[in-house]
Image (tube, rainbow, N blue to C red):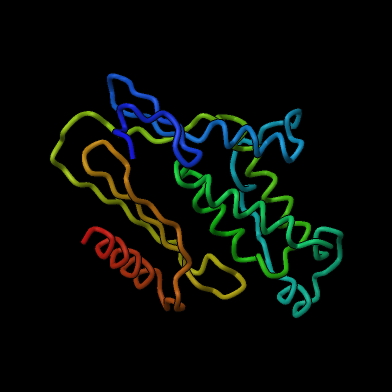
Length: 205
C-alpha cells in the first residue's frame, strides 16, 4: 500500500493532505448513495434519527397490539433495507456521527418494517447536509491519550438493554469509536455506566 501522503483514494475513502494533517472522507461514496436512492432533490434532515423516535420489532407490535398503520407493516422485500444498512455501516468508517443511528437500525435486519426503512432513508438525507464530512488525522504530536464513554440505560424498549458508546483520541486524532447494545440487562444506571467504562478500557488496552 502506498504512503498516505501520496494516496488519494483507497477502498472508497478519499485522502486530502493539509497543514493540519490528513483529512479522510467518503464524499464520492455518499453522493453515489444519495443518487441511487433518488434523494438528490430531497430536503436534507437536521439529525440522523428523529428526536425521541421509538422503533420496535414486528413481534413487539403484535404482542402489545399496536399494528395500526402502514408504517408498522413489514417491507415486501427486506433485501432493500438490508443492503441500505450495509452501505450505511460502511459509511461509518469515517462518520462517527452515524454510529448510534446505524447501530439502532441494524437490529431490525430480519424483519424490517416501513418505519425502519423511513428512518434509514432519513439518515441518508442527513448525510446530504455534509457529504464530505470526515476525520482529520492531525499532524500535531501531542502525547496525550483521551477516552470518552457513556451509556443510555435501558435504551432498547424491545429488550430493556442499555446502549454504550465510546471514542478514543490519541492527541487530536480520532481513531476508535463504537455504539453498541449491551449483551445483558443492567439493573441500574450505574451498572450500565461501569459496563461502558469496562468496554472503553478494554479497547484502550
